[in-house]
Length: 332
Ligand code: TYM
Image (cartoon, rainbow, N blue to C red; front, side, top):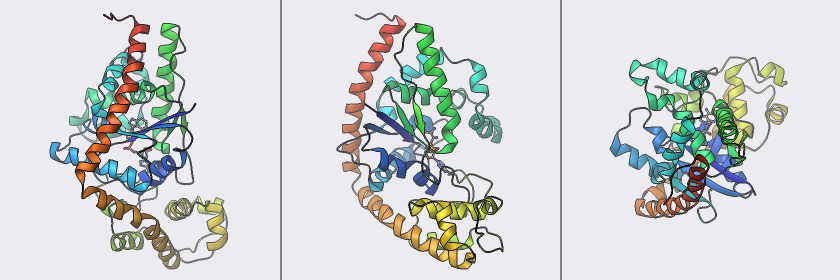
């Protein structure tokens, strides 16, 4: 049976990249096996967080999962910090992770290069905790955006290293599922930069909490060039901003870039941006509205998270016991 695990950090607004690169695909794969969807608050504190905002951001992230279509009756939705086995397994896996592997991680290099204050052990060992998240549930499939590919390769390497060290096949090697047309959504201000929560400009991204006016304004202001849309993918790929908008259109309409070019080649951006706005508003505003309704009753979200945490703890405790037996820890 497939076991599917994925997570998002509760750090500020979720955006269109999170939705198209991950969340939308989670909704698709939730029929394929037993799924756990985690709000990774332990990862969030690898950069400074306001404690008051963090707790609410955890609820808001959970609300986004539910509003996008994650079925909480069939799947386990929970906050990472409510399952202590994640950190315990993280420690054990750290003993199988050579520093050289961590030194290669581009996300650590990027984040820590922004400020000396971020040269922290927690940020450095972030990918080991991510491997623990995944392996703790003996996960087979992990739907993520393209930026998590390197972390996924590391998780597989760590699983293999543990299995080798202890002469076991305990951990399956988890498969990344990098799916759909928009595996890497780019900034609306710069088509060579990833759309990200940490970009100072709010115009660089569409947040899942944006209303129709904000979406329209951001798409209208999105950087483009003066040429109409080209007929071929090869030509499109030379124009990062144009490519990004076509990619977003394709992903939102469950289509492909090639199909979008078939119908829109020759169109001016003034028109294409209007069409994209209509599509984005039609697809995103029901999610935004549901998120808002869910956030009006935080106690209900808390109940859902508590139920999820109980189920996750049950599964996690069983696996952690098995891992501790493999490692040779005392058990009374
Ligand atoms: P996070 O919180 O940065 O992002 C959550 C998910 O959104 C995807 N994503 C994007 N996809 C396409 N285009 C973008 N511009 C874009 N920005 C973000 C990410 O690929 C991710 O799938 N390390 C993870 C969280 C994590 C995790 C895990 C994921 C912790 N443990 C275990 C899977 C399994 C992260 O920082 O995601």
